[in-house]
Length: 170
Length: 207
Image 1 (tube, rainbow over the protein chains, first blue to last red):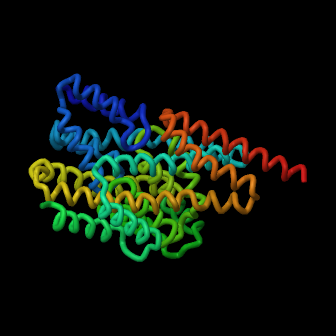
Image 2: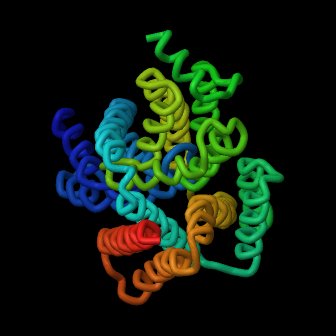
Image 3: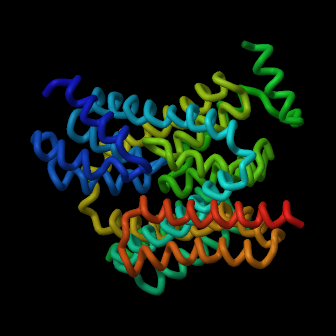
């Protein structure tokens, strides 16, 4: 496996996508076609990306670690950091036109769509993972605690995970 | 560069800002935001908007909007813009390294461990309940993102408020029932927002 090709395949997938799961279709096609990864490794990497700290997109680091060890993980981390720097250019342009009410309208409209879309996508994953009353209660309590800021969000997640491990594993 | 950074820091009108603290906060977010993007976003809001008050909810909403049209991971783009806002290029470097270094190291460690223990039912069950909590946290995070936009438009009048509610719920319904690509939804939201803000701005000028 050529490291240069490996880096380019990862960078290309990130460069021509947006969001944490955006690079999935391109990476899946290239990694499977090149025989670098299996379906099982993709599933594992996506699960790990949901629980580890940092952005969801770090599932790519997990995948590259599983298929190419530490050098692969470091290369993918570098490839993940580079494309978002385009935002500096976006902001430069925005600063010159942000006084136009239309521009603010576009940004606010996009934020509303993203929020709605994100909740629906996560709700879909939640539903497909096998929903029940206990899980619904955990989700509702977590939402209330996070919104009221009374309990650290890390504590919420730790308690939820421990609860599942102790009472749901039988 | 040091002087420039100090000047940027002074512009914050907040005496507790230092570049070391900025790096430490990102390091803490990068090392403790177990639960992925939803939790990372929540901790960004918690630290920068509510605890230290270095950026406003409106500024953050603008940052989210700009980052959607940028390639790659959106949260890294948020990190870049927040770091730049607080301490220029030095802030960008400190923020990106602070977020990425611990989270990448922990991701690699967990990847190595996970492959060996994923077959145990306790692990699978723990992941399911953790994901339920992540979903709950994401509801709170997204509510915080839309709240300033809803409040601002409520003040503007009933038409503006009705339009933002229509974008919020309309885009969700379109996605569920028509299964259209996300890009189309972005265009729909952006176009509705643009027409609405322009119309209201024109009406104000006429009055």
